[in-house]
Length: 59
Image 1 (cartoon, rainbow, N blue to C red):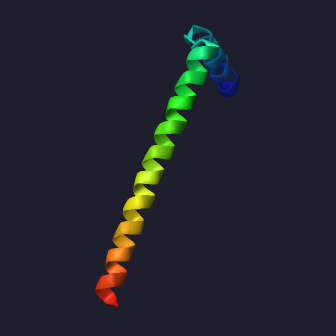
Image 2: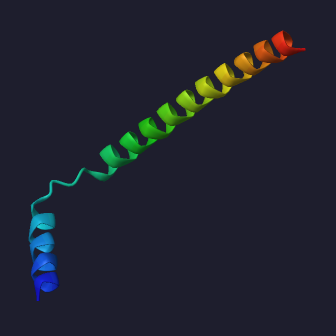
């Protein structure tokens, strides 16, 4: 019984949500993907530099 009540409450709350427009959703998704790629490239580059420095020190 409590599960059905919970799901009913969730359904009511989901109707109140202000959903973004499709173009806003697409643009925010692209920004998120681009930022993730930039941060990933930065971390990869820093890792490569640190690895080469450590290889030089330990060899």
